[in-house]
Picture 1 (tube, one colour):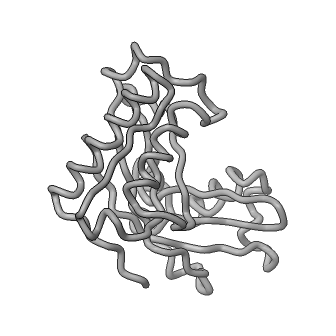
Picture 2 (cartoon, rainbow, N blue to C red):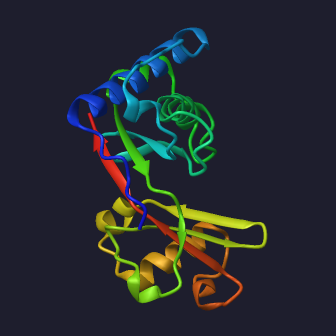
Length: 184
């Protein structure tokens, strides 16, 4: 599998601070702060997800799997989107920000899973596509819910709006990835 850029603790801390500063600016003024870094790993192109949690509850989660810009810019974009565009939740309001914990998942590139047996819940995330239907679950979701491989596949299909058995259909494309996950 393609190796993920393994961010060191200082890079992780910088991305988490950036995500929080971006949310503070966006929630107070509707703008995204200008930011520049000379750190090579933060300037690399990687997909990422930003998850917002209030206590044990998810409050927003948005990501980008196609690395079309620098990682730090992906994190800024996803932080704002998680707070304002996740259709499962009402937009985050400024008064909530102090109650939110930010989690970032930096992704490896997708690769097609040709052998279902190679999927390891907790290690791999799954991205399922068939026609216009798409669904993705991060690796930590399987761990959080204690899912086995088949349940993880079924739940990813369900998220895509497909029948839970769609992963068995040869027209369903199953891709996997890994993630480096860190949080405040």
